[in-house]
Image (cartoon, rainbow, N blue to C red; front, top):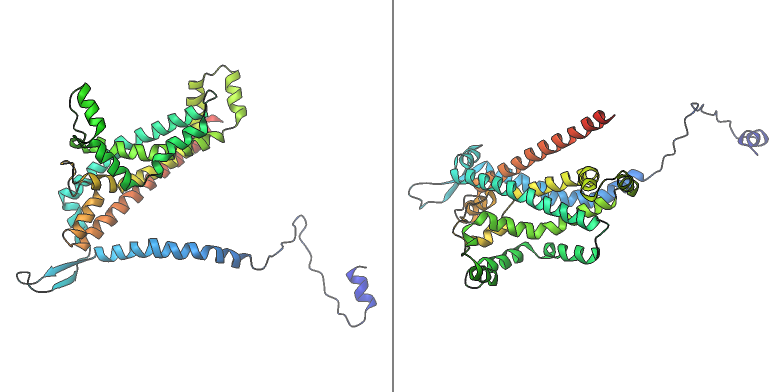
Amino acid sequence: MSDTTLRAATPGIPEVPETPQAPGRAATVRRPGRHGAAAVLLTPFLALFTACTLVPIGYAVYLSLFTEHRSGLGFGGAETVFTGLGNYGRALGDHAFRDGLLTTAEYCLVYIPVMIGLSLVLALLLDSALARGRRFFQLALFLPHAVPGIIAALIWMYLYTPGISPVIGALDAVGPKIDLLGLPLPAVVNIAVWEWTGYNMVIFYAALQAVPREVLEAAVVDGAGPLRTALSIKIPLIRASVVMVGLFTMIGSLQLFTEPMILHDVSPGVISTWTPNMYAYTAAFARGDYGLAAASSVLLALFAAALSFVITRVTGSRAPRRTESSR
């Protein structure tokens, strides 16, 4: 029985006019509580993000605007004075901070291509049809990343130290003496490559597994060899993963601290201001200049944000152009 017949047969029930529905448009079903569930699920993340990220950043910016002055000969108490952008000018005008930025730039130019290239080559080898024991090699290559950074730096410091390192002893026995501690940049790059190659190899290998097998089979039918298939098909199809790994690696490289800090006591080339993070650490805990340390940290964060923006814009603008040109 329809609603109209029921209203006609039952007295006392008022008739409700039907709302006309637009043709071709389905009725929208509102689900009560959907927005409330999303808010409940997002609240823990937003709380942690605010407490662990936004609040420390805001406090660092606040500290960077103040400095401490001592009156007289330094026997009086310290007075906190608002200096505005003065700490930023001091950091940019300090040659030690600029040298740290230059060292970090050299580190990025050496480390990022080597690590990404090695990770990509290993992932392509594991993805090839001739590879055997994929699971074993994935685990073996990923294990160095499971070692904490401090422990890894201590292990390599032992391997770099002459007199106690079996590697240095073996090299000295067959050839000229090599002082790895006297070359801090290659030494730190080697530690970082050892730590992160397996991790990024897993990312590239997972992206290669998503490449359609039909495309690879068509390339084989057309006569493309393994090298041609890797360069012309596999790498272009996982370009997004390569860009993502490069972006995250660049951001992590700007925060270089653990490895050179461990090598600081044994390598004469690693000074206390070798990287911007070491500069901020020295300013805060060796000199007690928290305003300068906060300003240098904020400057480093701004550099990382600017580079990330440039990389995303450049890599994002190339894809549409290639798509349009291929049509």
